[in-house]
Length: 102
Image (cartoon, rainbow, N blue to C red; front, top):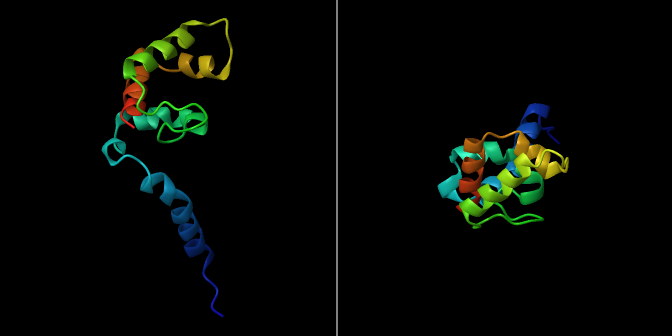
């Protein structure tokens, strides 16, 4: 039996693992500038906004308002507050716009 070279196996495995993220993503937002910024959010909120706490389709204004509240609550060191504090207001708006379009 022929053994697949390690490099080919790694490429195939990467393709199989990455395929669901691309296959189910909203095509209209694949190149959205907020997508890359939202990468920190994907663990909990999902790459498409459908996660433990869904953001998909929520109003961008509402997401911005919530994130800015967390950003300026510097006494609170919950994970969301810490993430929100790392973004500029413009980046928060891009992230919110990305999730609102899912």
